[in-house]
Amino acid sequence: MIDYAYFLKLQSTPLTPDTDLFGESAVEIEADEAIWQEQYSASRINLRQMAREAAIAYRTGAAKPMRFSEEGRLVE
Image (cartoon, rainbow, N blue to C red):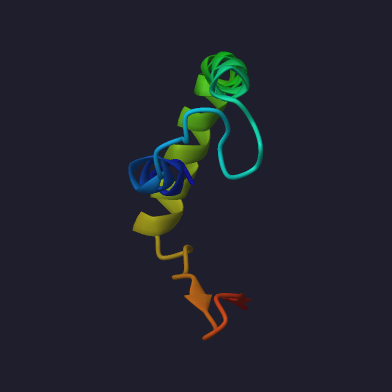
């Protein structure tokens, strides 16, 4: 999930001077980013534990690759 968030960050389009695609100003977006960073910092321990569990699942063969349909939907 973190890799996907990083991917999105790298793919983001620059903001227009006044608002972004969803009508938020740069100030509003920066405020949202600050809140997200605070929440991320608070949950870092949990995220590390989830990453460890995912790595164990991968190494033991319990993890399975994600598959998607032509429309981009997750196929189970």
